[in-house]
Image 1 (cartoon, each protein chain N blue to C red):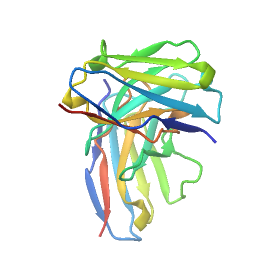
Image 2: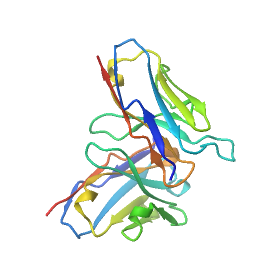
Image 3: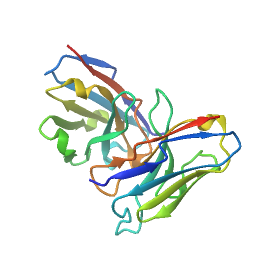
Image 4: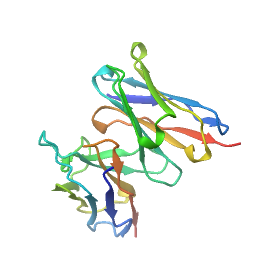
Length: 112
Length: 114
């Protein structure tokens, strides 16, 4: 199984300040089709995860442009340029290049 | 728009089985795999397995092999996940996940308790 490691596991951010979450995989997520199968989700209490970023850096429809994803191979980052109150929740990275899909442990983002 | 609607919460005794349904709409059901992911209370996300609704072929996480079966009824665009020999550790919210990992069902809480 591909182990996904997120850091930090929790983050307390002042509104308007940036935030960054790292996700590292034990093996490359670059497929022979040229795509890198790394996704970022935000989960709020009592809700299913909501897709934010697909294939490393593509913002999903309706996701504010303060969210951005970057990285390649085994190292990836989710950045929020200016955190807003609605951004609180748990962020997960996920790989789907290989089954089983595996997820990072989650990063809980709180507002100071 | 793509929508996945799951069946309601279940309470089962240890050793019993549960079957969760996931009704898809807004896209061609047979065009994309359905995956199942579970989440124990306060815990992370765990992939259970996947099914190709067109062929019916399945793939399961090793820890569930022999206990899980994924099926579908294409006439009603519905996928099913059955988990047998339930134990307390199976208590979790089970999600179906649709096309391109974008769409998730609302989740079904399965509680295993004597």
